[in-house]
Amino acid sequence: MHIEIWSVGKDNEAFIADGIAHYFKKIKPYNSIELVLLQTPKKAATTDTEKAKLQEEEMILKRLQPQHYLVLLDERGKMLASPQWAQQMQQMMNQGVKTLVLLIGGAYGVTDKVRQEAKQVWSLSALVFPHQMVRLLLAEQVYRALSILNNSPYHHS
Image 1: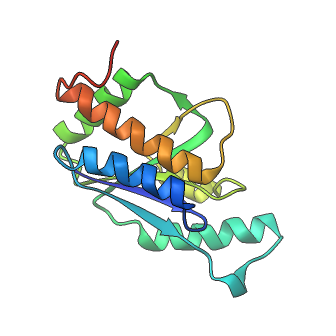
Image 2 (image 1 turned 120 degrees about the horizontal axis):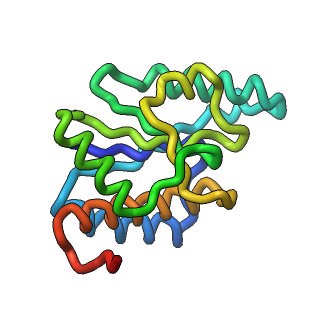
């Protein structure tokens, strides 16, 4: 199963990019993974939150393919412990999911249409984090889940 982390927003700061690269390198022996940044064109930038969400919706839905299994990350989503993340990922692999897409929406969230496309909605925390930080946290949690599934000593329960 290929994993894609989709994130609406700007490029990563160097320290975030380094952290993501660190975890992606650790993930590679287990799974293929990539980060996809969805950036709205500068000329399309707006302060109208609904218009911004609709622009982001268009980018997301245009990229979404039938073989994608979309999981939306949202502060109001279901909170899972790391072993539960691992179980969920194992179930997806067992079901033959080709591509797992973990979506980090824009600053104002996602539209109802995007939310309806998601097969699941997960939360990393009740806390709110900057989007770039979520990318790094998500990379670490993917590595943690895969290390659990592969009996690596990384996760201590």
